[in-house]
Length: 358
Image (tube, rainbow, N blue to C red):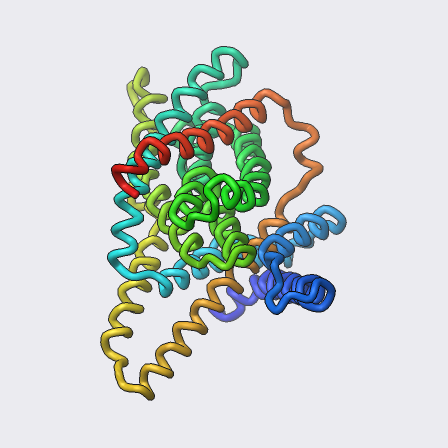
């Protein structure tokens, strides 16, 4: 019975893997066979998401595929992020975190102030503003879904906010790796911090970091972007109670919520993988065991990129461009300004604090 329960996810997972494999094949054909590079300069993750968007909007996904596609977006993505921890050392996590926390705090406060001013001009609902705010500043769709019941948002408002985050998140995911490489002159620390603070979704940050790594051969940037985003996700623990208080402060009763339900536990898995890597480095010191250990580490690294690329294909398949046509423009104006604001604040804050932290 348990096997049959999870069997329903297989078609969608297989489809995501097929799209990843196809993307990798196209990448090799274009980058290596046609352009003549030893290693393709094109990102497999970028091809996967674009291919997913095209196919997802040409063909209607059946229910049997949607279950596995959603599973891939939610769980295989997290598995990929956990596996990324194999690339890091504990002191690197602490170093990136000490820089990321003040940067994230400044970005969140700035976006909240800007959106507060915008809703008065554009006259969108307070609930919509809250959803766009937390989606833009913390962790995209996850934050929106966690906040919606607390502020009593209706389905239409949730759909608008998620579409908002999806559209501008995908745009920034595809554009920012190249912009950041030019603007920050390829500095891994700056680029990673920017990608980790300026892009909405965890999946989008992971994809942008992977695109940058594959385009510019910089795994350090992927590490920094991932750590920054995971730290940013933990701000849910602060933001959800804050929004619940702000929205419900004039009411006698507030909806119950649990910090345990909103905490992103895969962050602990990521940290656990960092510890696992460093324990292994200390244990397997002989020549034979070291070779086996290094091969194992390499396999986990490769698996992380496969899982993330599969998740990107799933994100693309789930992005329905037709649904966006019927949505009003005002929330998208707010979302666009929020995207620009968090990007500019991230750049300015890094410039200001460069001498102190970097």
